[in-house]
Length: 288
Ligand code: MEV
Image (cartoon, rainbow, N blue to C red):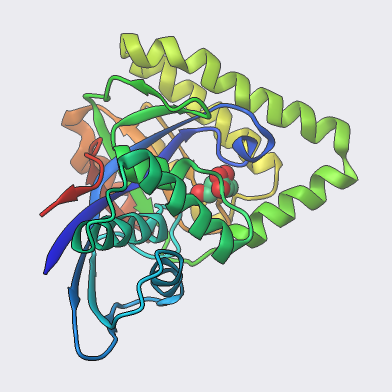
C-alpha cells in the first residue's frame, strides 16, 4: 500500500482575473488530503465525496487492475480550497509510485490539471500546481515567494459553490460589459504585481489593504454574497485584510492576521455564523 498527502490552497490575490491571463498569488495551506492506494481483488473507492475525479485519474493513467483507494480529507469540499486538486494530485502520486511510472512533480501537476479540466470543463493550473509543489507562488509563472510568517485564517460559510458556474457568470458579465470588466480584471492583476515586493518585505498592513481592495473588485464581478461579507466584516475587525478565496458565491474567505490576533479573528468569524480555521503555508505532495 502507498500513501501520499497533498495540500489545499488559498488565493491571496487574483482569482477570476487569472482565468483571463492576469497574475495571481496563491499559497498551499496546511489542510491536507491523504490518499492510500493498494492493489485489490475488486475496485473499492472510499471517500466522502464524488469519485468522478479519482475515476478519471485511474482512466487517464491507464490502470486496468482493480484498486482499493481510501481518501481522508481535512479540506471542506466545494469550498474554494482546492480539495479536488489535492485529491487528484495525491492519487496520481500514489499510482505513480505503486506502478513505478516515473513521473516527476512537473508531470504530476500537468496531468492533475488535465484531469481537472476534463472533469470541470474549465480550470486554471493554480490548484494542481500549488498542491504538487506547495509554498506560495506567483501565477502564471509559478515563481516561488518566501512563505508568510503571519497568521492566516480561513472562514468557511458552509455553503457550496460551483467554480464552473461562477466562472461562467463572470464571463457573461464580461460579455455584457466588456470594457469595464476588462479594466476590473486588469486592476485585479495589478494588485498581484503591487503585492509581490510587499510579500518579500512582509509588509502585512499594506498587503491586507490590497486584499481589501481585491475584495471590492471581486464584489463588483458579482461573486460575493451576504454570508461571505458577514465573515469578511467580522474578520476585518482584527485582521490586516480579508477577502474571498476561490470562486466565491459561497465557500471561504481568507484573512491575514497578526499571530497574536488569530484566536480572536476565529471567534469573530464563528460569532458571524462561519467556521474559523487557522492555517499556515503548506508543503506540497509528499509520501506518508
Ligand atoms: C477558483 O478557485 C479560482 C478561479 O480563478 C478559477 C480558476 O482559477 O480555475 C475562479
